[in-house]
Image 1 (cartoon, rainbow, N blue to C red):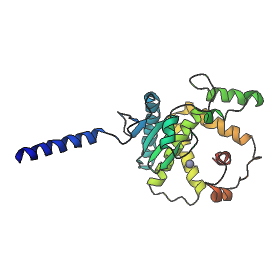
Image 2 (image 1 turned 180 degrees about the horizontal axis):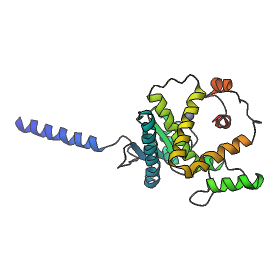
Image 3 (image 1 turned 60 degrees about the horizontal axis):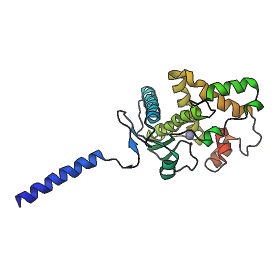
Image 4 (image 1 turned 120 degrees about the vertical axis):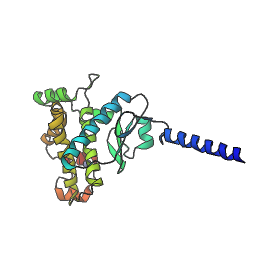
Length: 235
Ligand SMILES: [Zn+2]
């Protein structure tokens, strides 16, 4: 009887040990050596680390201003894992499937590339700015640098939601996130200001033709019920 008890205790300790070592996403790797819980599709450790460390720096910076840190887990996913874990269907759009998990694309993609206009059809000054801000590591043009920054905007939603900040209007919460993002980049990564600013300037310079909604009142009413391009214009 004593031996049985002994075996049971050893088995329980072993199971507890296994559980403490396992993580819930068996097909993803967990990033180590960082203060944020983060999981990534195998093969993307270097990019995951870059993204997560930037989020860490942003959280620390904003915490220094507002004395609050949101709890968030980051998922840096390839297209295959995106299908499994993301709730926004388009690969590349950073988003929260719930209030504590932020999903980010690990790879450059058609969605990011689709925002680059034909450079021979825009003024040469703008074409130069686009080339400078959005040439990726492999030499192709993509809005990757912009969408990577957009992940920090999404992080901003973690701050106001988890801190219980009362946002009287939806546009105020979006503005809060954009100001947070802009402040961090301007203060800590000024070399990346062009990546943050050239794309919005290009969109605004294109005028409002082609957009069904352009007023703040419409934004409140149609927040999650408008064409993504129109929503992007508001942002
Ligand atoms: Zn937002």
